[in-house]
Length: 347
Ligand code: KG4
Ligand code: ZN
Image (cartoon, rainbow, N blue to C red; front, side, top):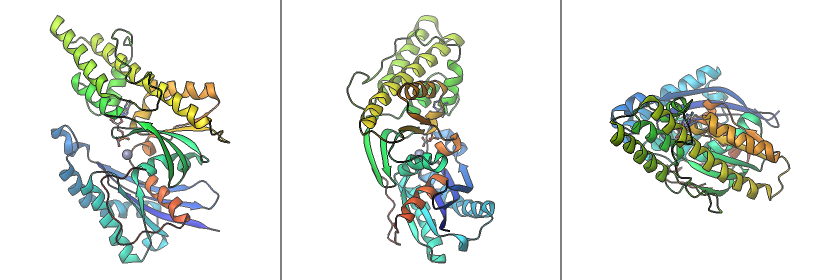
């Protein structure tokens, strides 16, 4: 039997995470533990993640996080085969904290080190949860990312397109801020949109007619701001119904643009005649019911399998890093003590 057990570390944004994943060759991997410490409260006063504060919190929590992940897996360090760590892209202070922690563990135990691209972690999640076969189409939609990838192997991705400005989650968060709704904005905008009229405001569908897989969300944000200010100028404030209509209109625009661009990406992907065609999503925005329904319909029409991993594995976590590390490790990848932390690292 050829089981591999890997500890994964993640600290590239505002979550400190550690996880243990084990896979018997040929079987679905098992997540033995997955610990995530968020930092939401820490950055509340600043309207965004503050890199210095994030880095310090990661450095303080990583050790404890690792201990807890091992304890929950009921394993000691010597039961591991390797240590995987997010080596980028992300906020450099946080990435460095994770890489240094992993190097310390590797030096102390003699275990091999495997650096993992955070985006590859997201992109391989449907293999961790559902054992998807390569090649599959991946849509990453979060507060920080928005791109279409064809995943062909652990280090083999073709980027078909992505946002040219903001990520959709950022636009949801901004919309919530403009309307006085709580953060994170995605869930509050989705709730507020219930019962709203998506057709009352004619929000733009940026780049929808362009024959590529690129997206843009910054214009949508501006359109929402203008619509809000026009109502306020006219009536002195927003009613509950105004807010619902603004949210519904904004959400419908995002969903329609994402669906249209996903249709283009699917066409390119299906051109390659994959044996088991599948579309997988990851990222917090994939939790949105309207967006998810639009993508599901698209896939059903084309006979493409639709895979949405559980939300806890779609958002930042270390199980995805451990698993991506495991695939690379199985393929022979090893990093040395010179493993670099990279703020930018395209797939
Ligand atoms: O993947 P994630 O947890 O973190 C990164 O961005 O890395 O994604 C968080 C983003 C936030 O912008 C949040 O507003 C958005 O995902 N989000 C949603 C929903 N739930 C979370 N956006 C739309 N609808 C939702 N239900
Ligand atoms: Zn992420």
